[in-house]
Length: 244
Length: 244
DNA sequence: CGTTGGTTTGATTAATGTCAACGCACGTGG
DNA sequence: CCACGTGCGTTGACATTAATCAAACCAACG
Image (tube, rainbow over all chains, first blue to last red; front, side):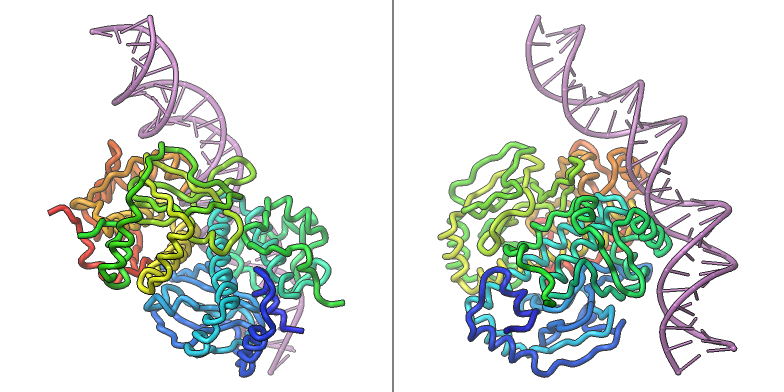
């Protein structure tokens, strides 16, 4: 069987065994990165493409006043910087939120990959889903109340982690500080804290000891108005917990 | 000489004359669309790709409470839905904001286009810029005060319109209601109005009679913290007004 | 056992939304 | 040519939401 991150790329359709083997070979020399360190900085012109195998990382931009704003989460199976083949320089940074395992894929190997039609399609798919996710984040931040906003975000992470087998019975590891969540959702740390308390009070979720528990997923989805269509997973049904 | 919208695709580098001719032929049978009508709806599975030649259109998503949220502006030279080659269904709608001239490009012709390496690269570039723009919008809405947010948005539109020759001496046609601007920037109509007044008061811009005038562009950019790097235009310098 | 990073609380202020009304410009039909 | 309707912009009063500041608390860890 293939690693869970490869299984994610099969969301669009199954990959030939050859292709899967090729992908699997990529993950041979992973390296570990401490939490809170930059994988890439704004302005960089990386030659390798980076793939997250374990942990959480984020795309972020800095505002002139020194504030950091997180614009995307990268979870196992996500590619950091496929753009660099076209664009000259990074217009944002990428930083680890927890300890991460990452592989650096040299340019020529990526070209090898994109010569395989199925893999190329899968990478296209991943890029388009990233874009769709940004659109959803935009309406989330721009149009929803703080509570629904946070709830919606937690739903998304839940579904995405499910797709790589990191959710058990509505619970997942989520070792992020409330400050980080605030930077993600455009809320101050204090307000973030109060919103989380309120969600807890309404039995929509609990977040403590770096573990997030959602007792009733459908309730949370309904509350936040979450519609997973923007993630473009065809087989949302069989994307369940993978621990037997 | 080539139409201004083609000139935009040359942002990454000049296109061969052959390619330009091919693009030019596309724009033969344009159609006109009334303001406020949908070009595509969420859930659609279009077979044609749509290209805007004149006017403003937007990508939008509806919230459960009936609110519309605009997540992107489409101006002359922008493609609406290149994604449909990979993704099954639209996860958002596209609607005209003003009267628009649009061409529908049938799938096979798009494939013809993507077989030309330079055009393919240019389309990739456009897609990646769209994504980068979404990121910038996210930090704009999530991290900036209402005034800077509006100012930043106006800067972006200015620069983008400049690239297709629609700006004259810091002024451009901008026939959008304050309600639409509110839906774009996550502000109520009333607050939008007050913010515009305040920007006018500070001599940063005036918006009246459907025309936007920016007396001092650098001042507006500085005020809003606008950095055009995310638009990835190499030749920002020569992208000036095209009326001699 | 003290330090440190993260969470929680309360009090206060600032930003933004909501509601309701009014005004102004434009186009239409009598 | 005028009366009227309609869409958009503008205003004021008020309610709500969220940011800010400052302090206390808690738990993990050397």
